[in-house]
Length: 201
Image (cartoon, rainbow, N blue to C red):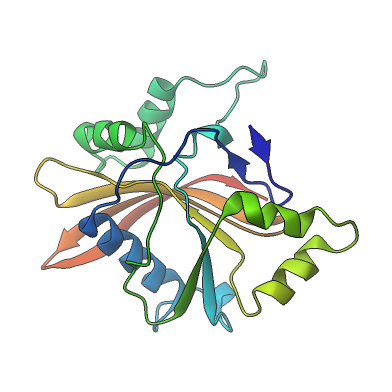
């Protein structure tokens, strides 16, 4: 397993599965909420491009550990997620786990009001191989970007109205977050219902 200098852990699994159109709808709606429009976060001000890993990651490689340093089983993680977000259905969690059994390659199928670029994580690792100021080099290569965004695949409830995914964004040495997101479709629009922060740096 490769660990990039900006904190991303690259799984050796070869991307093989196709991301569905409705997954792009969900991920686009989340991205729009965070980076564009009136509701964009203050930290997104001035962002003119979103840089996205072209390979999905489920977040398992960023797994939490107990006080003895042992990985916390997914069942306990799922239980914790349900406690923090009671609206999250078990079937949605199960769908998330199933669809993320393999990585997938993202395509330019996002619908965003801002420019975006899909980047090969492994190739971009070379940007950070140089000593000195790797993040300075990164932002010279991707000026006006939010950092480096990685999405998981999206799990859906059986009726297709609830979506659940994982997203991480790294933006510097001590700048980044990993978050589970619950979204629901209301009158044809995907809305964020709950965000559960997994880690912050």
